[in-house]
Image (cartoon, rainbow, N blue to C red; front, side):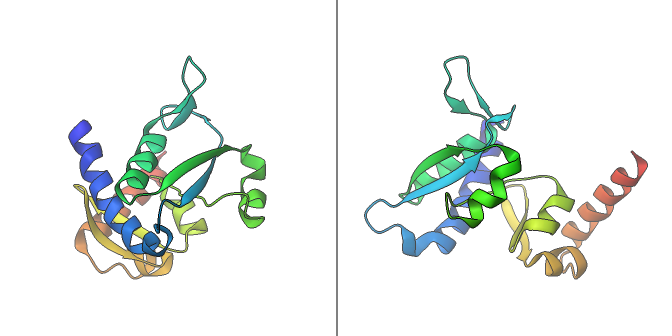
Length: 147
């Protein structure tokens, strides 16, 4: 599991470094809105400290590109309003394809810790170039319809 997380973080850090390179002058603060109530991805531990898979991935990416990360607890129903009012910058890590297609302006599909395909949601979901991405999306769509 730790090796898998390390591979994901390495690829995500490369993407973040490309996208956030201009931000990392001395040590820029990136704020992230999160509910902190969705274990195992983002939740408060028994000491009241925010933790979870997504939290640790974001912290590691920030560390690798020399950014400080600050999490801003935000109820889900206020998340997009807070983003629009620039209360924070949001980084979304999701396995929910319909959600990613609906809200993202840039999608990166990763397999084995490597970015296989990336682009706009339309490019990735509707005009898929890579067979691996196409097979995955067909399987996810089939599983979604079956349930």
